[in-house]
Image (cartoon, rainbow, N blue to C red; front, side, top):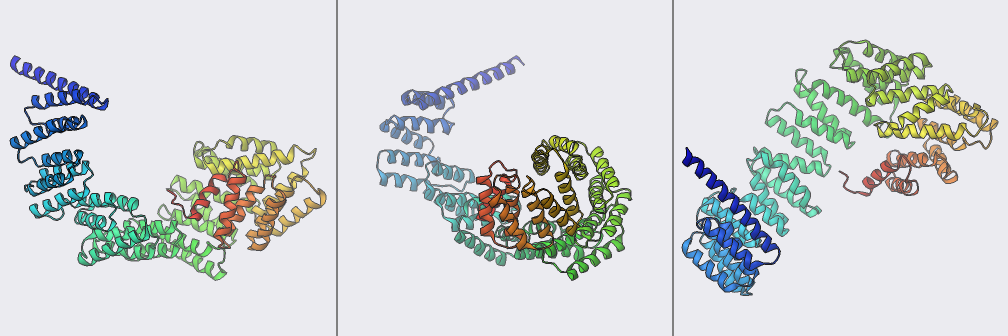
Length: 602
């Protein structure tokens, strides 16, 4: 026992001493004291009984750095006599000749290293890395290719060869060997996608990848890895139609549960390719059936995508809306309102209110949902907020504030609670209780949601600018009433109220605010040219007023989404973040500007 403990202590002390000497040698080398470094590295190598190649290599590097080429050559020759199987020594020898500007002799040594390779995977890897450290990419590739033949395995060094071609900038060969490495190795897919994303920068590179993937898919139709890479490529190129075709094929081939296709539907939907998203979700509904875990979620998303496709450009017809209404009714009639269909029922209530303008039906749908037990708390809370909005549109202020308060109380520290508090503050604003409303808006300036925070700041400044300048609150009360009428979709009455303010209080500080609401009303009524004209009037003639940045942002959105004039939208977004850098819209404007310009936004 004492002997064993003694041996352990000796081993520990020996390792500790070696570590200290190794650190000392590195310090000598880094400070340019190469002779001292060489002495310490040689001592370490001898202590390891000539087994530690690292110390020998560092010893030779120190001699070469000190330009002691003669001793370095003698040491390498002696080492080759002791360990002729160590082919890395030929690389070291070649490096020495290069330091001495004897290029032909260096090439001969590098060739010897490759010619003397044994059929040993570890030695082949070490030689490849030795060439790599000297940035001898061609020789490293040659070593790995010979190793491939020696081991009779074309895939064994494929990834290393691909990485070397990547370093050389040879995209075609890089792709070739990365794809070879991926064969039957699904765990490598994520890494390959990252490499392709980083290194294939031109259209020609992506075309080469597509060509090689096509060939692989045709040669190995059962090899899913290549199909998945081709699907990824199409998604990367925003060709969601072809991506869906491959995704569906893989799902059928592997008899999967549809998750792959669901994910593609989400990607396509987020990219506003609603046609492909609809196909993806329809596939789940039609092919997987009610017992599939994604069936109800797919139905939810399917109807959501159909609604977005119809309404995205504000050019839908009554027939479009009625057709979608029938689909909602059919689904809910078949499956009822319950925990599985709750999200879709909430969506249907919003559709009835916002697109069919059928507030009584929307209220009935949402009230039934809120009163149904076993529903997810967040779905219920969101349903209460929508129900409160639509009741407010109908003029039921008291039940609206009750519902807002319920959500506020239940989700006090969460986004939903903040949203409910903002809506309650807006109710007070509509009712003319400006001091209490402003106090709430001031609190909500620090909301976790940037959107709520920005809106709260906007409302607080609006009240401050238009209340404290006058001895009477009547103009602001009339304006708040006009905004409420706008919210309730009582457009003509809202226009009339705004006109009455202009007549009774000409040149009031509310001028730009009145124009802003008028522009919103025209937009709701699809009178887009009128809205465009008013928004321009605001930021051109009232550039210092608080609605100027709002008008720029609103018009930029119209150019982007309705008029389909991305160049005009880009100009306005740029104007917004340059001329109104303190605006609450500045960050979002910069983001959208970069997207329209074609920047890669992560």
